[in-house]
Image (cartoon, rainbow, N blue to C red; front, side, top):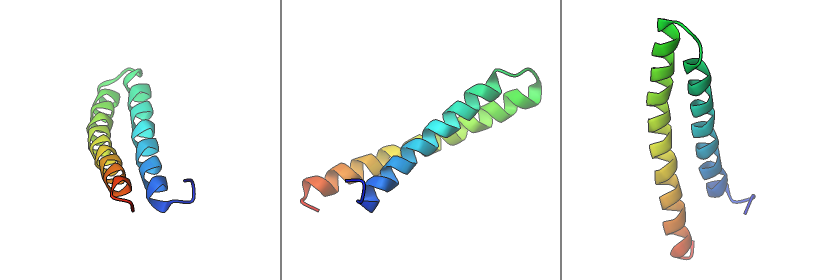
Length: 68
């Protein structure tokens, strides 16, 4: 399964989402208006990355159930 490029793409999408989430939470913990704005922007990007990751997971499951 680790040699499957589609699985690796799904895993990368999940890792990117987690990295953005962690960065956003750490930025949120700092004081200052600029850090709050940066944290909000990162959380916005996290939602987009999470949406893409979920779509990739659904596509992966659909393709594998079709025998691909």
